[in-house]
Length: 250
Image 1 (cartoon, rainbow, N blue to C red):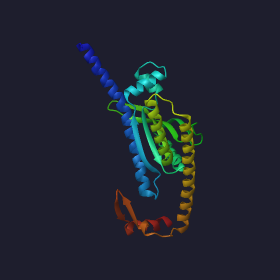
Image 2: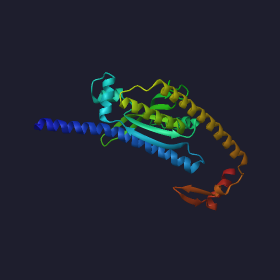
Image 3: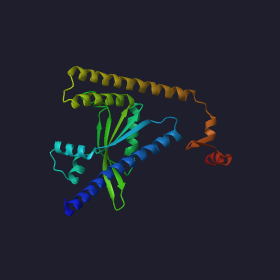
Image 4: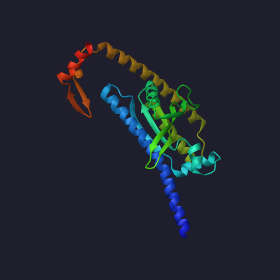
């Protein structure tokens, strides 16, 4: 390999590394934002709608294969314009209502831009899959410029996440062996998706009933109101600060 081709390879490696880094940084940025929301809910509310998150970055090979399937020429601009799920973040919740709460919180962040929304909860896929998909443009501050990078955010319940994970494993097993999934299994998967949806709706009703009961049974005054917890440290509220309550009444 001559010196020119070595230098070209080095430059290409630099370019593709920088390109992939942008998506990695966009995921880091979103995960930090989600972690802030988690801590906010833990400190200020009795209930946290976010169970856990999982992120993934497509490999360069997977990106190229998807670009080929779309019939596009290989170039960085074509990749950015035609593939919006290079970076993916999955947020798992306990209840269906949590999905829309989290979605609204993300939409309300002024520097995030929602480019596309697909609601597979109100309009499930043919196989029964339910989830909320958002394509979000995230600002990423590099050393010499600011980039706006697209990531796909999937928000779904624990029940549907469990179903989707098993469905993926079943499909992967058959595609790995170049076989079609039998119709009987496809029908059972669809029935399982329906069962997961029914479970979600039942748990949603129970959650709302429990919240109503808690409100009815709550005391007018609670010792917990005299203290706050920040970063697992407990602080008593000084009497001088409680005096501010009297000032607000004047």
